[in-house]
Every structure is written in C-alpha cells, then in structure tokens.
Length: 465
Image 1: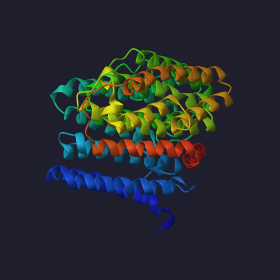
Image 2: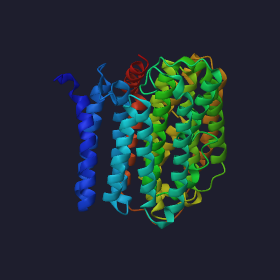
Image 3: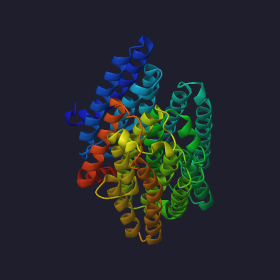
Image 4: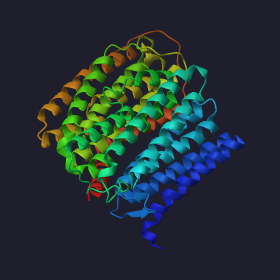
C-alpha cells in the first residue's frame, strides 16, 4: 500500500462511514449520538482533506473518483461548512436524526461532484445534493411545502437542461465519450459548442442563483428554516460553482474565448440585480437572499477572467462567502425564533444582545468588502484578476456594486445601534458558536489569507495540469 495516499483513502472511508452511521442513528432515533458522530467524522474528513490538498499527490479510484488537490480543497471547505450547518440543525431541526441522514447524503453528493473524474459523477452528485435538500425543507413542516416544491422543480429543470446540453455534444466525442474529464475535447461545429456551453451555464445558473435563473432564491430562502437556508446558501449554491469550474475549465478549456463573454454578462447582471433589489427589502432574510445573489456575480468575475489567478480568486471567495452567509443565517435564525424578522425589528438589537448585533455587523461588513476582513481579500483578488485579464470595466462595475451593497448593510447596522428600550435577548449557545467560528475564520483569513490562497493555488494548478 502507498502510505502517502492514506489521507485520500481516509476521506472516502470516513464519508461512507458518515452516511452509514447517519442512516443507522435515524433508524434508532439516537439524536445526540448522531450529532456527536457527525461532528467528529466531518472534522476528521476536513483534516485529512486539508493534508491531501496541501500536497501534489493524486489518485484515481475505479475511474470515478479523482482525489487530488482540487477535489480535496473543496472537500475540506465543505467539511468545515457542514460542521457549522450541523450545529445549527441540531438546535433548530424539528427532527434532527432525519435531517442528519438527509444531510449526510447531501455531503456525499458534494464529495462526489468535487472529486468527479467523469461527467456522469458530476450529474449524479448534483442529483444526490438536490433531492435530499428538497426533502430537508419538506420535512421541516407543512408551512415549508411551497419552498420545497419550488426548490425541487427548479432543481429538476437544472438537471434536465444539463442533460440536454451533454446530449448535444455526446455524439461528437467518440474517443472519450464524455466519460472522463479531459482537456482534449474538440468539436468542429461552433454552433453545437455555443449551444452546449449556453445550456450548461444556464443549467448550473439555477443552482448558482445567477441572473436570470435566480427568481426562486428569495422565496425558497424565506420559506425555509434558517438552518436549511444556511445550507442552501453556503453549500448547495457553492457546489454548482465547483461543477461549472470542472466542466468549463477542463473539458471546454479550449473554448474559453467563447464562454468568457457569457460569464462576463451574467456576472454584471447578477451583481446589479441582487444589489439593487436588496435595497428595497424590508425582510432581513429576503435582503440576504438577494445579497447572496449578488455575491454569485462577484464569484463569476474570477471565472470570467478565465485565468489561473481568476480561478484561485473565485475559489477563495467561494469559501469566504460560504462562511459569511452561514454565520449570518445563524444570527438571523436566532432572531427569527424570537419573531424578529424585518429590518425595523432589529432596531436597538445592540442594547438587547451585544453579541448578536456585533457578530452580524462584522459579517455584513465582510460581505461589503471592508478591510481587514476576509470578504475584502476575496473581492480584492477577484477585481485584481479581472484587471489582470484586461477586464477593467468588469472590475470597475464590481467595485461599484460593492459600494451599492454598503447602503443596505449600513441600514441594518444603523437600526441595530439605534437606542430602544426593550427586553434583553437570552443567549443562544448553538447560534453563537456558529457565528463565532465564522467570525474567527473571517478575521484570521482576512489578516493572514496566505494559507487559503496557497491551497487555492494548489487546487487550480492541479485542475489545469
């Protein structure tokens, strides 16, 4: 046995153990055991994935899974995010053992997409992510049925469009059969390539919440419990970016000049739509839903650059925004449990609970790109990558959108620090723990981002090698 590949085998084995034990605990209804086991296994998966992500080693298993720095970088990130979502769900889920079982399948789907060695693994992984996610919403209660149905229908449309895109180009690749992710795909017909790329971006655009495929986002986010909203915004949406990077920048890397203008246009429209509509939102959850849409536009800046630097910047921002939005929804869910939902309801929050107001302030400032926080580093890298790729106008529009976003974040901050005599809000340990962990990472990687930048660099080098 090649002992230096133990971390790769360990991540796979621990993921399978996580799924199996989650099913067992759901059957026996062992709530505490399910929580402790899930937390320990997810942390272990993250540690082994981080070890593998920092090395140039790689291994392919059964021609299906490819364990290499790119896959391990995102598995490491999703493991950390899954721990935070798991903590929130332990506190807020009506039936935690059922949620834990469904969530383990979602994580396995993300594992499969991240480490995919062929297109069928990506498609299967996206299905495994989407279907259990819809059931987590549905299982939360009758009042969440509308959100579950909307999410399920849009996910089904996304997979159908992706399947159609692959069916368009499948007959043209007789050598590889579109089975393996390889950069030697060639088609003489420009029309077929253009249609396929448009359909692929549209299909994953539903999952990424890119304009104009994002109309489901505010209703689903508002209609779902906050722990599930945190999962959808921080994890489900991000796995679509991983799939898009794998498809466009491996199989279609020779057609970057064709798809880059499409992503530039989508990035601009997504940023402006998300930020402008967020300005008029009275409900805090819907405001963050539209803010999340605009963040998808920022992430696409790095993809539009279509360079090594741009991909590294996008990878960094994917992790940064996931931490910020999960931390934010931890606080929002805590407030929602106290029937604090609108911007006006947040008036005087600092006087009622300083931790809630302070943590939400830090998270929003990071989303706005204020230094020295992680969100600033992510946006700085993205805008720099656009300028480096001679997309100066895109960088300028991204900076303009960052200024627009400051207004609606500042509106909430102003309300929270307005004096108001109200009853104190009791501490909520689980929500506070998640927000605190997110903030610690945001400060640490804002002041010293080099470790994550280095891992993102290794990931993208391995992807394009």
